[in-house]
Length: 317
Picture 1 (cartoon, helix red, strand yellow):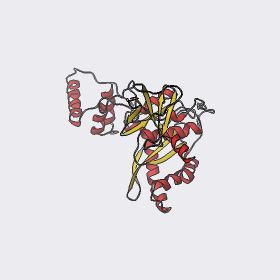
Picture 2 (tube, one colour; picture 1 turned 45 degrees about the vertical axis):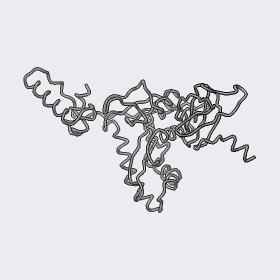
Picture 3 (cartoon, one colour; picture 1 turned 180 degrees about the horizontal axis):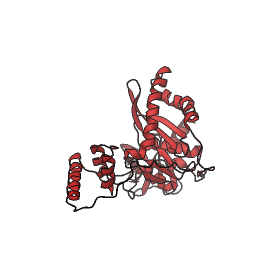
Picture 4 (cartoon, helix red, strand yellow; picture 1 turned 90 degrees about the vertical axis):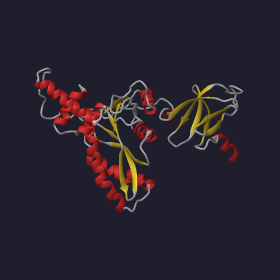
């Protein structure tokens, strides 16, 4: 079925042979061989031809309610002269409203968390999120193949915790709306940033939030097909402890946790005299700060360099 879809899209000129091969997880040469074998089998009536499909792929209907499906994607572009950044928007499928939009040095898990966290804080938890097969969204065992919906990425684990369904796009056509939207941003934003004399990413992000995003939504948003919303207000505790990277570690004999070159000292507490050999969980937040948890209990918080934050406060006092 996957071959039939890729073959059909190639015959209609919607994708190239290279793109069709990527969909199947094979090289261009293998895809061409598949076509030759198929044609020869059909010519000798060893394989019947599939029923003729319609001339055009039907465009997917938009979701009827806000919050039913959210799109998140990234666009790498030279947004200001000499500076290549990734633009990450978080968009509602029903209304085209851009809830969040930010420039980052490189798209990844943390940038995706930031967009989702901003949306949940603004509107609530949504039903599903539609993404491409980028490695921070999905694990893909074979290049160009199906994603692994069992072995989740950090982002996938967080979405599962929140009850948000993840939907994967397998073809460029499936992301057509995102691609058209990015073309609009690429045509407008560089000109506007240049006119404002903006050259650094911090100033560019302030411009996005204060000026560009409200103006873009005012022009391109449209009403949903149905009244109402599927957003659910968030009331589940610390959202930042879900939308973060989580890693299991075992506490060493020195009552410290070694994490990516840092030594995180666990302070004494009233529950245990030490945590030697215990399995703990390290959280890395979107601002770079860290925390160690033992089950549901937070043992300590640290800055990005591994210094305990509460000790800093005591020293300052």
